Amino acid sequence: MSGVEPRRIAVVGGGITGVSAALFLQSDGHTVILFEPDEFGIGTSMGNAGVISLASCIPTAMPGIPARVPKMLLDPYGPLSIRWGYLPTLTPWLIAFLRNCTKDRARRNSLAKAALLDRAHAAYETLIAMADAEALVSRRGMMKVYETEADFEAARFEVELLQLTGRRYDVVTGDEIRQLEPGLAPIFSKGLFFDDNSGIVNPGRLVARFAETFLAKGGTVVAERVTNFHTSRPNTVITDAGTYKADTIVLAAGSWTARLASQLGARLMLDAERGYHVMLPHPETPLNRPIALTKHSVFLSPMEHGMRLTTGVELGGNEAPPDYTRARRMIGRVAPSVKGFRAEEQSAWLGFRPSTPSGVPYIGAVSGKPDVYVAAGGGHVGMTMGPISGRIISDLVAGRDPDIDLTPYRIDR
Ligand SMILES: Cc1cc2nc3c(=O)[nH]c(=O)nc-3n(C[C@H](O)[C@H](O)[C@H](O)COP(=O)(O)OP(=O)(O)OC[C@H]3O[C@@H](n4cnc5c(N)ncnc54)[C@H](O)[C@@H]3O)c2cc1C
Image (cartoon, rainbow, N blue to C red; front, side):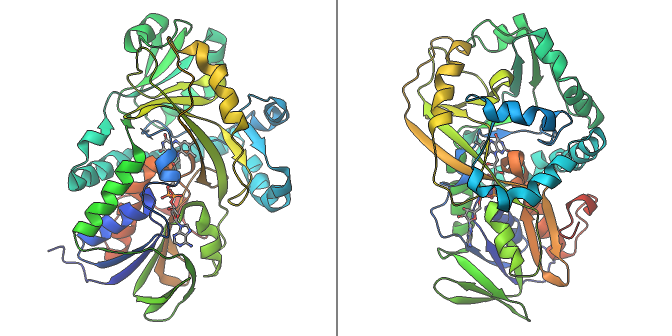
């Protein structure tokens, strides 16, 4: 028995954040209803690079980025593109992003992310054990590789942030890279190796396994889209097909959370950093772990069903249809980095990173509505942060000390 007063709780969104929150809340003895209109494990929490990246404290908003944006946008192989029709909607987010591109802000944002990442591993382990999902996680670390000393030198401030936040890493030489990853072409001179990172070999299956575990333990899934709320005691969740009473509501709908939160009077600075992947066959010598090819801003991740190439950022909101051109272009671009590279595309996919301008997620109660919580905004590391965000929400609902200063993640910040 958890000793927590049981409530009826509606969790909105069945990506990694929502299913994690549902499992932790259920463990406290609450009656949990999870609203997810789509199948589990097909959305953003499926198609990512699969890195449980305790190292990824570095925000996207970094000094030097504003000056590099024009070049990035003009480069057909660059890490950033914009759907220009979306620019008016995006402008407030972009301005806030640019304001975060200072050294001081980057240090502050890294520390806020790192405090969550420090607790992310334990939260994941709890859920992996609960769902008997160990086979879906490969514990061989993650590596960022640089072709030239100059490229590595250019990442000096990133390394400073890794040190500031106490990340665990080793600087590795070209020879060490070749030993760790014999499948990479011998063109890399320096690398950062993070031995405490893990690779999820099929993120979609992991989310689906968590959802199955929730169901097996008596949870309820409602395959309907939430459209609105009435906040009174108890609260009401309104969907496209019905209404449901709940004492407590948890919004964990990824990049769609901002729209839902606005119905409750909360203004979140949250937008979609769209990202693509293409699945390729494993190369001649499969990679041992996810590899960040820093020159191309892509990850190559060995999955149980092939090698996944994930791309940079497309700013364009949730509605615009996918355009796989750039992701496909990257296939030829990265081919020389891997021995025996096989370029036959098996599938292509678009996902929506739920991103704040600072890279720091929202986790906490909505002001003036103590029975409504938000967990969203994990951005580039949302797959890593999902379980810890869910655990913190369960602590807040239970009135337990979450063992972390939640000020940086406040909803009304
Ligand atoms: C290319 C790419 C690579 C990435 N690589 C990594 C990585 O290696 N490591 C890492 O940690 N992170 C990575 N990420 C980021 C990570 O995938 C996301 O941050 C994370 O999956 C977000 O999870 P979420 O549960 O918050 O949101 P989502 O996975 O988007 O889930 C939100 C859910 O809410 C549902 N929903 C939406 N609206 C409603 C509604 N009205 N009613 C009910 N349900 C609703 C949606 O259907 C969806 O299932 C990557 C992302 C991309 C795109």
